[in-house]
Image (cartoon, rainbow, N blue to C red):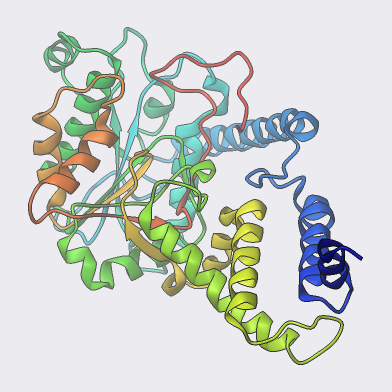
Length: 396
């Protein structure tokens, strides 16, 4: 028998670790993961052609239902002035939440702002009697001829601030979409500080829906030492960009570390029992490490992150990523520094406000920026107020 045939026969016997590893990979990556993950939106196995349209339509239907419910809620509350209890803002509060909003020409029926404000009120009421987790300010940056109807509906319940007509004219001068968006953001940052002088500031865009543990996690974040020395903490990063296979160095370390830890545990188990004959060797440890790394990446890192919601202390803080700004925490008076940095840059496509802040935090000595995972808000905005919208919005 030729030598190569003898070697092949030797390695393909079931008792051979090579054969066992091959079978394990075929079963895992060819059968188990496809069956388990083909409906998971952020998995590599997700079958877009079969499920994306239906899932997107369901997402829009649920958002529409929440929007109509929020509209009824605030319409009923309007008759009772100040029933929400947020029309007056106390200075020097521990936390101010500024919600930036503008009128949408498309998707008005989803009432994103009303959804966000209803969720905030629900969470704030859960803080307990006589205790307020945060002050809330609505910053309406609409500069068109038509009013922002949702913001107007909230005026009896919240303090709503707007630019004067003269300020609106200056804001529109010599500005593209990205520059206007940046100027609006700077206005809201400074207005919040001017009115409340808060110890900490959160800026939410009007389609960033807070999750149930929002305030518990914020309290934990602000109690950590790093919060004293950061320009901002991003509370949201698009789920589709949360994979390990991304240009974020810390994720590579997390990926390899996870693979090594789980592979070591598996090796200890498999080395003591049938049907596998793995041993405590470097080669087998390397194989199982790569096996675990590939498995978690294909299944979707997003779903692994969701396990951290078990406790606020389990949320991971890491260096800030580039995109995006639906929800930002500015500890201390860092919102003023952020406003200055933004003021010093002219925004264009490819250098929007999120990129400016990211670059400033990386290049200015002494500045740092962080992100938290998993996300503390859900991005519900299928229709943008400042950019062109697709005729049929999709989740991916």
